[in-house]
Image 1: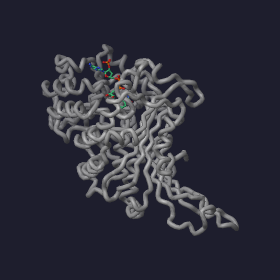
Image 2: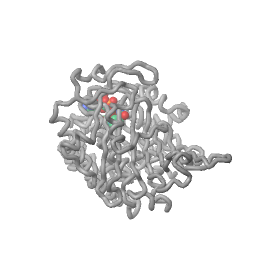
Image 3: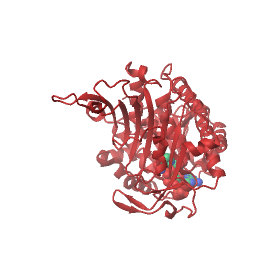
Image 4: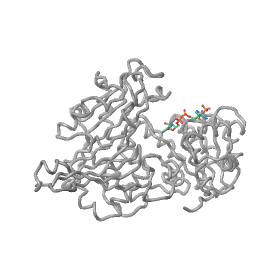
Length: 486
Ligand code: NAP
């Protein structure tokens, strides 16, 4: 991979969880790979007063566990030479003079502002950066999800950012789009002729997208209780994954060609009536239970969470897409906290053979299935049916495993690393456009409205389970079941 052009990256919120777990390690990896010139600089800004040395010691201790074997003291000092800590309150317009002075002139330099604070700071940061004259045609801004709480608040934040940055300068990050298997799904769909004829209602029975976490609140209960699984995960990550599966072939790989197609999918999602919200969505909240053999508390007992909380920690929906390609094919989406495994996967279930010539019992009722796995491992497996060795014509499923680790020796980029590189290079393809984001908020609006209007609580599920029983019923009504081969 080519060296990166000289850049300045300003992490506004440079001491937070995201900066320490993802952003600084991603930048370190790029330094280690020799792609960051000595002239490139990283600025980490937060309110806490500390010296440069104190910040680097804090960062080293925090990042090291996430770097694993990639850590070495020599690269760390080369990385540290490029990093500058800047104590500032991003809400205080008076503190931007110091930021400007630290950045110096460099009008032609690529400057990436990464908004790694809570979203309430996004509007003031944009206004103050603009007023201080720190935004040029070469500036970019990366914003994190969830952007807003609903359609109206997302519009307000987009307006505030859009008042100072052009749309081509705004990089709305959805790190699932940076994952290698997701990009491989694009390669599989649009780099091979094999799948396109099958990628439609005639041959696909159903699609399942699961993003399951074992973690609970990890100290973020206050944030989560105001957010919930639908806003935190489904509105963004799961709908973006659905778009990658369902989009029409774009005319090219340029950002708008791809994003236009994703937008069409989002606009084709069948809207829910109030009655359909009850029938086609399931929301759950975890109760006490055990995950990986360890007892864990109920959601309502987590720090920062209201005892009467009605926030969902699990959501499953049955989505339909009103297009010729997908009419009648159910897309089942589910995501939740305190599930049995850390699992992120897309499952494409193809239809069974029209006539099983070897008989139902020999065939075992197995149909072809493609599983794109993002967690815990990254893989893509195509399940076919083959004959068992021996006299009898007994069939069994076998899988063609496209094992990325074995097929490709190059180090795989972490999603954040890939997306930071793209932001530095100005490549928008894997970032979400404003109209996409607003189309996703529009589609979830009736669900949010209906949930908020009623008195119902989310259904209980035991921590360490796959969500309320109603989640399985959502599929069993169609004679289907969630994939359990993981
Ligand atoms: P966090 O741990 O609370 O960190 C927030 C950072 O912002 C800290 O460095 C904090 O430092 C700084 N900050 C807050 N108010 C400030 C102010 N007025 N002036 C200057 N700095 C300020 O939050 P996070 O988990 O890193 O999340 C950051 C953003 O990423 C959020 O929008 C979140 O929704 C999003 N996100 C995070 C993750 C994740 O894995 N953590 C994943 C997806 C999205 P001081 O308090 O010292 O100022």
